[in-house]
Image 1 (cartoon, rainbow, N blue to C red):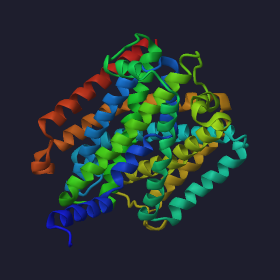
Image 2: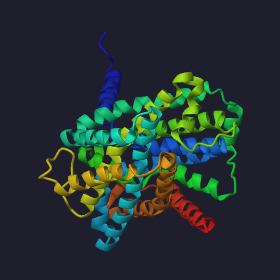
Image 3: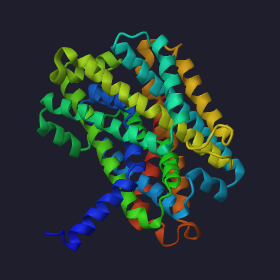
Image 4: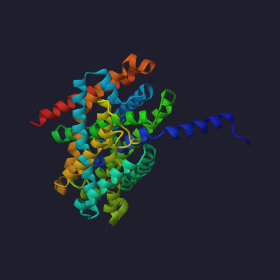
Length: 414
């Protein structure tokens, strides 16, 4: 019996979605980079389940903000940095790009710290292996196209299921987990506030806004593909939140009751003991290695894309070096200089580097969010696709809360 018209339409929509899928899913899952895994591990080991509600609210905010970027990319067919240059002054654009460069630089160094930490778990001399991995990443981007790299990264998303399984096998008290998720517990001290900002910073990072909108443009997505692009974004944000949630649960169930505070990858690896037994370090190391290798090229490329767009320089993975010299120069500098800096950081400080980079994200994000909200509410730019009232309420509310939290952190730090 031939398929009905309704079934045929459903299959057509599914195939179309699979073709569009990629930008949202990859961007959100890169968010669970080595920095993110470290931050969630520290949050769970230090405060148990008390930061789960912060993560869920951050994941909701991420979905709202990433949808805005997807919409702007599909409607304007331009990257976020392009729009900033065209709608704000050159001086403002310069300072935004400088702040983004510094924040992303901290992120890349943090992800290299995650890569080094994974090598430590395997008892590999990271000062030897790290340069080799750096060169391999450079060649992957240099000889690849967006389509090839997208396939690699979509496959890498699957490895994050390790952390979800580990949380269930840690056998937490799910009643307590649910209670602390919905009761909004707060601990009034500097370390809790720092971790709360870091959780938000690793969930809604500034680099993500530039990267997702850039690859939406590069993939050639337009207004008619917007519904599918939105679902790509929402599914990616859901997966990101799910993985982060269960990393906190795993560490909250195993490390927090024992009073073990995560300071290194070796500490965090103990959270997977219920799943892997004697193979805990191997399993956690594979997850951390994947997270670092997954994120380093993405965040480095996001930075190069944003800066080149902001100043009108050619950019794109599919171009040759002589066609986009500034793009590949920025990418190369960030990649190799970050790896070089890591060679001088003691192994015991690697997780602290990762946590610091996420706090920087959280402090910078309000400014980026305000810029996005100003752009997406311009009728001349977005027409009928400009922001709805609910999106504006969430967006402006989040910008206000993040600003207040950042100011409180600065006050408490003195």
